[in-house]
Every structure is written in C-alpha cells, then in structure tokens.
Image (cartoon, rainbow, N blue to C red; front, side, top):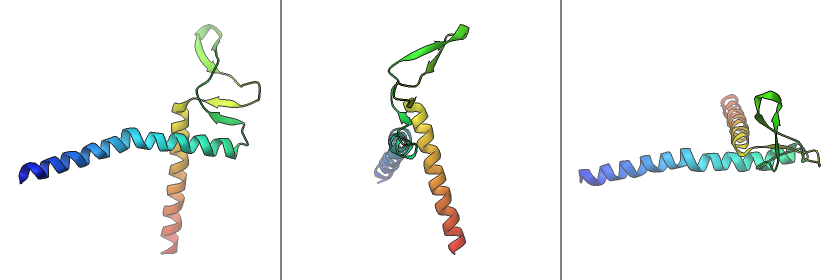
Length: 101
C-alpha cells in the first residue's frame, strides 16, 4: 500500500514538473505570438529571425527589422512576453475578485 502512495506522489510531482518546464512556456509563447501580433497590428512578431547582423566591435548578434517593417522577437523573448501578459491578466482578475467581495 505504501508503494502505491509513493508511486502516486512521484507521478504527481513528475506531472507538476512537466507542466512547469514544458507546457507553460508553450502556452506563454503562443499567447505572445497571437497577442503581440494582433495588438501591434503586425509590427511585432515572435519567430526565429531569418537574418541577424553583428554589432560593431563587440561581435554580438542583433535582430534587425524585416523589409516589411516588422520587429522580430526570438522565441525566448516571446515566452517572457507571454509570461508578462498572463501575469497582468491573473493580477487583474485577483484585484477584481478582491474588490467584488
């Protein structure tokens, strides 16, 4: 009986870690992909940049604007932007719920 309980606890923890490391970044990325593109009328898009240039003597890579005038963000920045968007949404819901009660 104890081994079944430990197996269930291990399964639940594994599911929590999977959600935290795999599912949430995917949700954040697709949120940023949809909302940033729609909110900026296509001026910002989240995708892999096709071309990058090196900045001056540092040799650091810089993402450039495309010929259509879009600013391309990397997927990692898309995940961060999606996290910020969801944080704002959840914070607003908590505030509205707190003032309703």
